[in-house]
Length: 152
Image 1: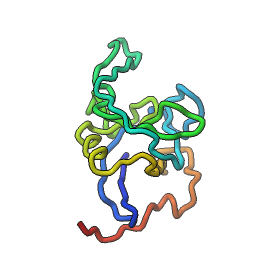
Image 2 (image 1 turned 90 degrees about the horizontal axis):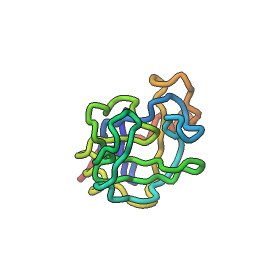
Image 3 (image 1 turned 180 degrees about the vertical axis):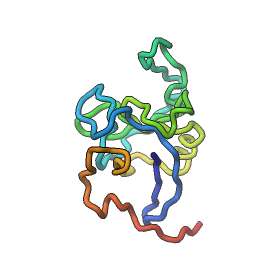
């Protein structure tokens, strides 16, 4: 489970471990605990440092549940989906979210400061190894951009 950042020349710039939706498969409806798959874009980059969330686990409102920022994605047919930080670093690398993509807070901060911009394309794919639901993207998309030598 990773988030990879590519530049406009298809050069890999960064890779971060993530957590994603608890349930396998493509998001179908609110509350299904699935991360939507497809081609999306960054709609907003919001300051989430004061946001709270009740995960329904009996612990009540958790301050810092989203980390410093919420990168809101434009996901037609679904609302409230984004890339954000976490109050639970142990969840990274697992299926733990209600549908969002979750990062370590330091990774989120680097992502926001160095790479993300409004309108940026975002592709969300399910790993074939992680899902009994086949990925519906063509082989070329599943393979990802060709990696080129990085030049700083």
